[in-house]
Image (cartoon, rainbow, N blue to C red; front, side, top):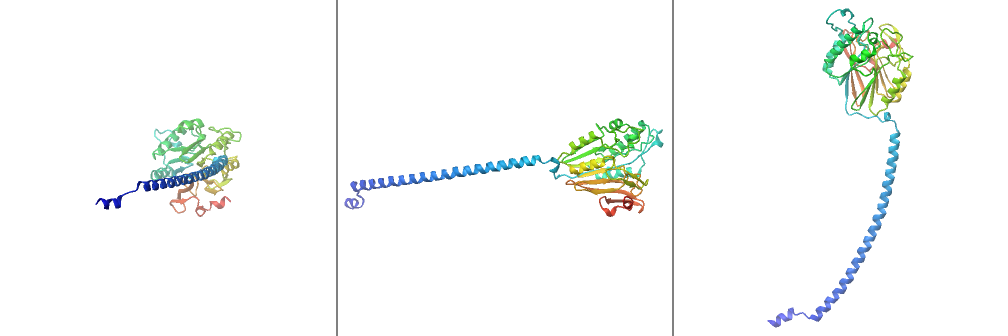
Length: 368
């Protein structure tokens, strides 16, 4: 048994040492080769890394410089040329030239408004639920109204319109200032000025006061020669600042910016404000989205390069569109105006899209 074991498992120590030494030498050589190979690969990797790192740095620097130049160029572009596309829509109820005159009730303790167009407006607004309402002026007739009674009528109209339970923005018309002073008008409606700005989300709404003459004097009761109106230099400078915005801008004013129109109810030319060309040029330059006026009692619409111009008839005086009032829907900065009125020809209440030419009656021919 020992012989068999010895035969198969005996190891010669000398031969073992030879093989160990042989493998040690081979291992050392292999180790050195691996070390040199790894060293070369690391060097190559470092060269590639630093090369592309430098390249990436240069590219990032170029991108940064280009971005910086682009930002400088972008910042140099006026704000009003970078208009926002609003995500929210706005609903506005508009009424104008109600010319309410309750002078026959001056000695009564309680006075009441019975004008159909005005009352229809209140009823419709409760259904429409606008974000706010605008009265474009000539709220009262004001002629021969003492100031205390003018204030009483304005208070009553404010009370009626407040039943809709939404903010109301007021403009002074030339008829309002036949009875009350600008200061009394401001106090009645809690205004700091007769021209002002309201911002709502990405919209700016500007309300102008054109009750000045060419000498830039503000109208006060019992003064004439303030028609057709005028925008003072200080207000124009203020307007320029308000127009310098990325917000979508809509402007409201009592007096008009349309060239002279023949009003059907009096068959006479109603003129725009004295410096209407200057104001229109300003609105077009600053890319105002919409302009709305009353006063002229002529229904007119013009879409310029950027600005939609609307001349609105009132609730009382235009024979083609008596009892007029309006719902303005602004969708992504684009206005769409719906007109409500009583049609004497068809003897019924109607509502139409204001901008459609086919809806303009033959008063258009009179204004050519």
